[in-house]
Length: 371
Image (cartoon, rainbow, N blue to C red; front, side, top):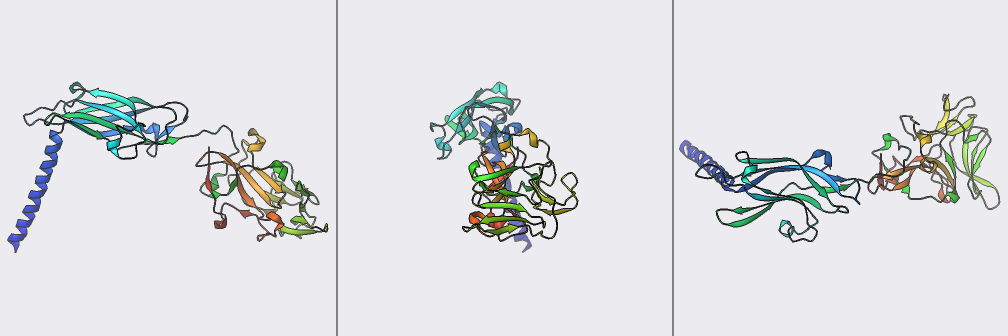
């Protein structure tokens, strides 16, 4: 029994040594082996070459290393080969790359024996350039050599390949979106017709409403009223001229001073003697805001790039926050929070604004970009 076990173990060792010998023999006899190909990391994000301007060529640097075979009689094979870095959109496998009309040579070098230091040749910070308007393909390295034993041309490609990342830089500076909501998804509207809503900008100095004042939608069918009893109520006008409350802060009995839309995005009702500069005690707040409380840069962006509160003709009271989509980098108006009273419907969440950043029922369409 012991003899059989020893025999089996010896057989396993012999097989391992045999296959290792075969691999070494193949490597040592091969004319050329590519051991690495890498585009310099500062040109790449997540294995994608960064293209900052799709309409212009994109230069980048790369490195690669070759090994040449060892002769059975001693010394090394010539290591002569041609190296090409290619851009291609070929979809049918490596065999179609050379003939595909999309394939472009970005770099080419004829490697000679003098390029080697013993068995290896290393090339660092080589220059290449991706032409303009190339975004759907990949970048890879091809090496071609003559098999000196069989006089056959061998064509191989690197297993390392890079896609293209078109980085679109926005031309318009927006007020920064709250970083505490950067991992959330949002609904949005691409554009708003200014004639269909009354817009209120953020302001820490001047209130939107003082006690007893109202804000009307452009069609005068909806009214936001800070009542003297402390309740902030959204009313709709009925056909007979009467009004019906469709949303409120449920703060009646707590006499209010002023309603502010602060530069951190928070909508707040303050007591008679309080304001953003003297905030305690607050009567009510949306608590949907930038937790850093920063308002730096607010006045440095264009008015149409700032967050705003909109009392719309459809009856909805909405906080919009201009931002860029992560995928297309196009500007949109994020629906940050709302009363959900479109069409004059009675809100199901009086007492608070519905945050579109935490509600599964409003699962968003995109992630907000931060620039």
